[in-house]
Image 1 (cartoon, rainbow, N blue to C red):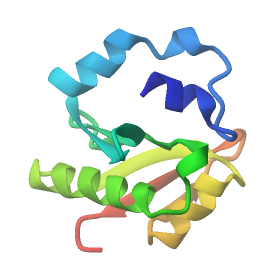
Image 2 (spheres, one colour):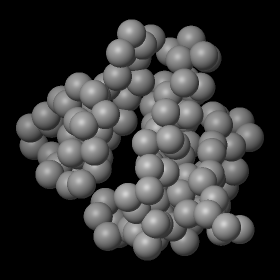
Image 3 (cartoon, rainbow, N blue to C red):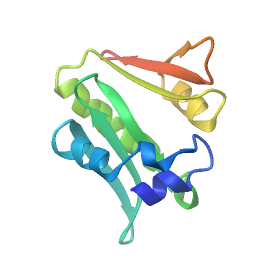
Length: 128
């Protein structure tokens, strides 16, 4: 999953030390739930849902495997799980004017502009 995260062309992680292997483990074991998408025997995408703040902590697809619907399915799984955990609203943030920015708009999320930032926040209410 880390290699996919580091391979993306947008929303680049400028300092890989900010996302540690321990963080991946914590969101998997203690802080939330995760899903992967496989094609053949290879993981080509993943999503993580954080239960404490009802957010999507990560959603990334290997650039070589974009356009096959993996992102939509991974997002749907994470959202369904968070709503089942009692979330009334889910949140996330992403880079402004990126493909991810347009992706979340197309999925029906509400976009909230953050004024002095290069990021935008999104929220999705339970009754979408």
